[in-house]
Length: 298
Image (cartoon, rainbow, N blue to C red; front, side):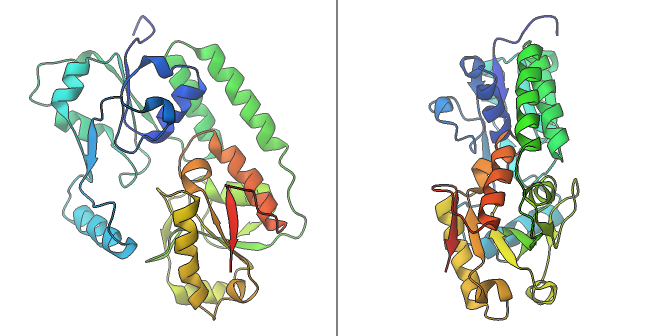
């Protein structure tokens, strides 16, 4: 691409957030159904999920598992709308097929259309760590013609990350990206725990999240449990966290160390909010709630 793109389509919420961080909201021409940045309200929506967002966690897990076993895409892209928008840049991701549209889904959507996609620059963001998120920011800024702004934002995010003050007690922390069934946090989440001064009992930096059993969790005996179910804000995560209060076999429950956080804002998405997420974790490990961002559930 020889010129800065005038029309950008973002098919994942983190990219939309990053585009607004870069001051490029005015160039957005279309978004995904999951993009919830206030500045993107009213833009054409190009995607939908095959999963009913109003279903229970167990039902959602079952639907996703069945679709994956059958080789079905979890999302569809409206190729006609994409073609009509005629974007210069399409942003998607290759990290998690459960979380957002992948490049293969886009290719399938426009396979039989004569329109714009072959000429568009399709950027797939791949960050699986904090460093990877900052690399994605730089890549997006470069593709959008504002490389300098990307470098500035990345440097500021790194400075904030490096200056998070960790707790000194090294509590053993379980992060839950799903409750029914339990999934532990992966990718950048274990880094956030470490940066905050905790020890992640399940999950490793840069590695996918994974399933666990409640028996495994009880055997690990975490000091603190943080519920950060993917795709949800603080209120819904507090609801999910309250389900854990029935598990009297967990010491974290007995000690009143079950917390909920705003996953969309600070944990689930590979965007600059992960830096604030580490700060929020550090505060809750000190026993302090961050208003609107974390809450102790009892």
